[in-house]
Image (cartoon, rainbow, N blue to C red; front, side):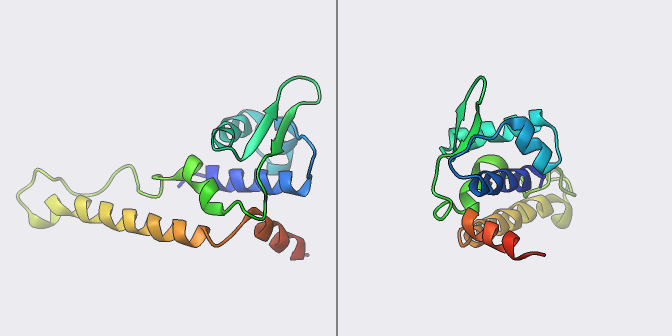
Amino acid sequence: MTSDFTIAVHSLVFLAYLPDRMASSEEIAHNVCTNPARIRKIMSCLRKSGLVSTKEGIGGGYILSANPDEVTLAQIYRPVSQGKLKPNWCTGDPERECQISSNTQVVMDEIFDDAEIHLENYLNQMTISSVLEKIKQCR
């Protein structure tokens, strides 16, 4: 999995911390500790999902357009990371006569697909607000 999911959650929690206020990609990038181009790429996915709204020009940026009490981490995971839990390459060769080599990839794909379903179910139990509250409890 890439860090896109963590960046997306961090960005939305940051916006929830600044309710009713626009934040530029530079401001979000500074808080996340990454570059603004990466923020813009991830925020584009979140905008298409209806989680943020954008305004261009002076005073523009991103604003949370969904209720942080209702947006689950699964809703963030799907547009930025769904399908990325499975590695790009798996051992074995489906063309070989060896039962192990020819079937490991199929079985591992099923395992990762099931793991992703469990991960999404787990992420459905947490919201942007619950993450923000956990962060506020840190000292």
